[in-house]
Length: 146
Image 1 (tube, rainbow, N blue to C red):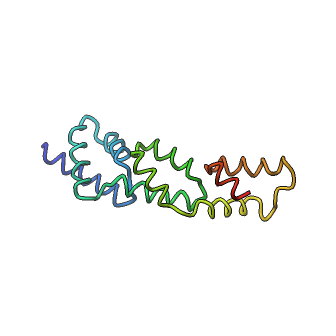
Image 2: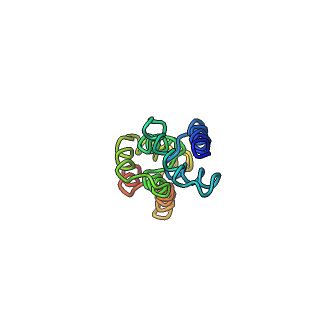
Image 3: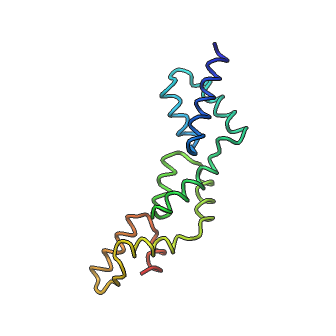
């Protein structure tokens, strides 16, 4: 039964990862919810997935950052989301540094929201700053854009 259960858990892990990238923690939660009380086997299955390069937190961080950045979110917000998914901070920082178009993304989001309106007074400038800040862009990026 033990090897049968391991095979079932491993195959379910493969099934989930084949649909989209997952962090190790995310996959652990999903498998634990589906197969409670098999924690050691789940750990073993996750280890095997990592050895076979099927599950990779570094690759997950890169893919997640690209996906969320395309949707208009900034580095700070994405970093918080990845921390919530318990991805290692070194993977997060490396992937954030590798992504190069934060300034371009901030300009695009600003243009999408405010068309081509340049802030004319303090209140309108603060409104645009707040919008970019809430999207997760850092103060330095916001200052460069505005």
